[in-house]
Length: 73
Image 1 (cartoon, rainbow, N blue to C red):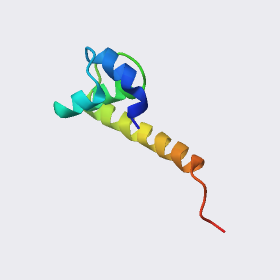
Image 2: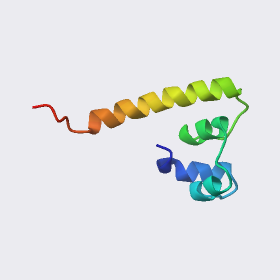
Image 3: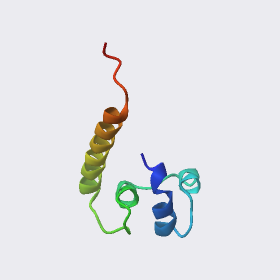
Image 4: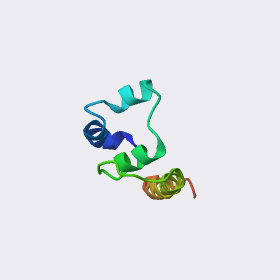
């Protein structure tokens, strides 16, 4: 879900790759939201960030499900 946003992660984190960020303990929810929305990080409460992550995950899963061939006969 986050891999396609590598460039934004680098912009937001002084050139660090997602792999490097992961090796350093990852990013917190607000940082992840900013990366996924391809924008600079802004102040966001932990609750708002986690709620937005859930929304983004649901959108991602719907898109993924729509692009996966059905096994129904």
